[in-house]
Image (cartoon, rainbow, N blue to C red; front, side, top):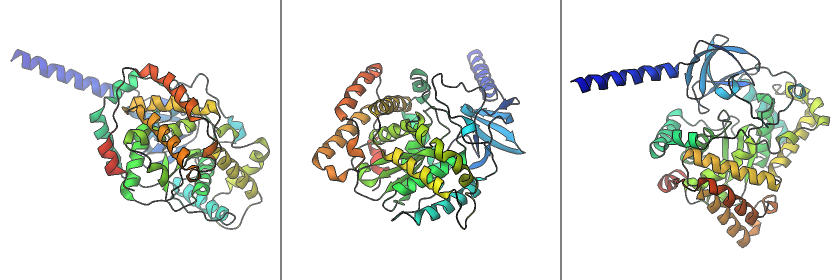
Length: 412
């Protein structure tokens, strides 16, 4: 009896401690350090409700993991902790100057933004041959589908322990590009990369988004909602664009054998986005100032603006940077970050080396099936050598491949 009482008392204390920790910070006023995306729930897989401008003071109501429920203009929404004032900035992070892009506003709702980008895409498509329209906000993956996937992976690996063991080094390059502008560029960029129709297979769409979002939770930028499109072509290519837009080809996915290889592919592309490779070059000083009026009038669905040519120039520049071969140092950093994200998520690190081996073997056998820009990527041998050096810090690590889930989910 005494042992039973002690056990009940211990459980009660643990429960009270859990409630206390879950509500730490609640009731406090905190400042938004960069434009925050207010979502319906605590995760990128929840619907975007409102954009909260930088320097806004909000009241924190509840805390869950790295997400905070805040009150903003009589609405209760969830924002990521890395947009609040307790989030520490990366020591060596490059930062865009807010003065370069004007004031960040929350005037455009997600619905208005979607209409604005679609309007721009329509005008843009008229001057570009064979573009296929993509869903602006990505695909509507049900929250229940992702949470089921997340639960299954959490049972298979101890991700909390892995995240504590393999700490992030703060590689994200913080910037002040407003959501509307970054996503309009990214969407136009992804649309231009869609040289074939996107595959609308529901199981495939749900699966690749679940893997991507699960990985994203283990990165510095767990607030980015990646939007993936699988283009129905034999060509082998993967392109990351501003705003988390990612274009993959069926030909590339058909080379993969397990979920760890898919995760390695996605983690590498995410790393380019998070580390800011190319984003600092998207807008040059000459077109940026004139393009402001084009961005400001994006929501006008008819006619064209005098600044539209500048906006098209920015889109073309973003596309050229997204598809151009990365510098060796960028590829090395992306591989290094990809290994960290894989380890923090419980995936087999060999997925990255197997992926590179397959790409090299396929490239040696049939060069023409690869996108022209991919052919100029850094030597695979150099990347493998660098990965080998990085793998030394993971000698005692063992990850999983999830082969059966991959065969079921990647229904091509």
